[in-house]
Length: 291
Image 1 (tube, one colour):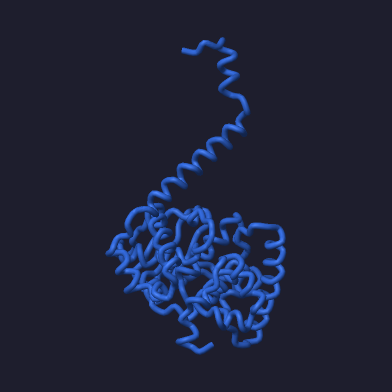
Image 2 (image 1 turned 120 degrees about the vertical axis):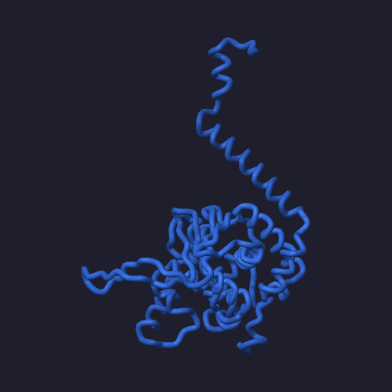
């Protein structure tokens, strides 16, 4: 029972106003979330999961021992927080979950992360799937049809779709420049600034300005090369828009880092600063391709 008069008791409860209470709740929520994640990381990593990673995810054995340990910590959190659903008869199992998680969490090494906060569920098809799509022909003319996909991600629905055969092939060959998991999770990073514009959340104004200047130049260069048929290191699908440009750039950064740094040094430097890592240190690219 309160010993204060009713009006004093009410005032004592509401001091600071709604904004202060919201801030207080956010701080408490953040603390509890961080504590829960630390507990997940402290758990022993399941041996069966580790076997899957060593058998399926080729880049893992090339990481340093410290990076391997950090990656396994991130996987524990990722798998505890993300849901998986099988489509077209595919049954979700640990092989699917762990193979996807290991590749996605490569993007999180050496950085503070909230683990792709806009993503709730990953839908997995056995192989390439078809979606209804409208394609612009010219002027006011559009045509409807079916389009095959290896993956896609949605900013507002909290979901991602992946084709399991593409996931497996991407994990098995870490130097071909193509990885659907890296591509789709790059989109998730792009969405963290609440705009699919090819610019993820960056720490400072200076970083933002430098990023936009370099990316604008590189994007224009890729579009010009695509228009004229000049061969490019980056997948020309990146010429579609800035969001796709960022996604294919992430694939090249992690899978063709030596070639990317050689041909686009400023571009590589921006990606290296954002991800706080240099994939050249563990890339299979040089031994496979000699770049």
